[in-house]
Length: 629
Image 1: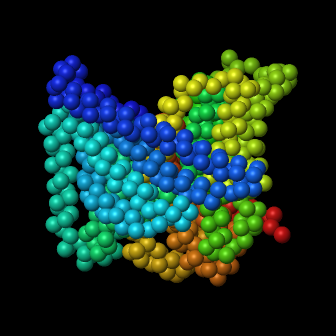
Image 2: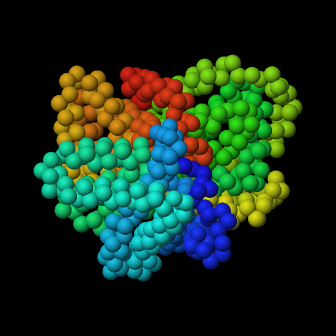
């Protein structure tokens, strides 16, 4: 994955004369930056203001603003698309570079150009359906604002058009026209070959799922094509060549995936994490935590595990949870010698560890589609996360058992007390956020705005650190990171819908019902199946798709529905955060700004620990049902 800025080879040619072709391209690129970066920053700010005003109006003045969520959703889709544009311009879309990095310099340069040409192909293919989709939506009137839905849907063709322009500019500025021509020719040849083979693909039926969703996705990911575009290209090809589905339906499914109101928490928590760092709250919190555990080998790693457990479920998004924790702990952990790859590996696996912690949106979804008591799911979800957390702590203990703490002294009781008093406003933030959700002050989507307001006031009045000059870059960076993540979710949602329409869900349920071994056999197969599904569909789409099919089978073979729910959610979490296909792993890498290659080796041990913890939860129903009445 490339999470940094564009390489020097993608920038204006050194020494280019004014008025020359490279200079003209550089000028166009600068203008694209101006017309996208400032507006996208203002959109992030607008979403924060709209949601916070909605909370204040409803809770303090008992006068709900009925259109606030709708307006926030419209702003959010525009922010996501423009954020994806800026991410593409900066070269910050998530991509796997493990194999690219091992190639020769010449081949690596070619694959880097191919990673521009492949998205360009998808954008060209989807441009007309995106425009048609916006036209279709123009006749729909939104329920609260009573305006044409084209105001929202137009974000898709505008974003696609701007990404087309950005991709073309990056392709023209690679510094090697011959290499760019070869990459474009290869992509065009592959597209033409698939189109010509279309009549032969149609009779293959469900073998096309293997060809497109294993073959095409796998080849694109390994070649370094950005993850979102790898998913999108495979889905477009499958629908266009093996079905009669209108392609604007794919745009609609991507729109649906990117428009879930709960995803608004992603940019808001990303910005909250940056604000915590900017106001000095992060430093105060880390100083306190370090005074408690700094003298322990791997101490801050334990803090990371506990911190994720504490904030998990508040936002309803694992990406948002990770974004709230990583900026607080990573800088200090790196200063203490922790390797970035190990940090992002632990961050990713703690995301999987805490999938069952209430208030979990996945658990709420399970309750809504299967009829299982949500209160029972919330009660049953606490202990399984502890079991997996203990497994992760065991790995941390083993890896850091010989950490050199020669220069680290144990803090005195007085020093710990002073650090606690200074850090109290910062330490209180997670409790303020969770209390706001539990007490009904704000929804999971809105609660981060309370954290933002709290952090801003604490920075201004208590810690006296608030650099206004950093606000604009922080807002832009928030949009870039969020746009890259949300665009992946949109592409994955389109792919999930294509899998659903293929009948894959029904076939899988039938096959699992026929597995021998009774409850144990069904549970074992369920774990494997949901690990795989979690890497493709994520939690909510997979549960909506398979929950109504699988839970009746679990009841029929004698598995407690709450126990089965915990195992299923944790298995999906393991798949979601396991490379090379787990989307959550790339989100963690983007949030930590670490190349996925660095996390590949260290994540293995953590994944084994999660697997052991998952087996323990599956084998001992009491972990899930012991506290149920």
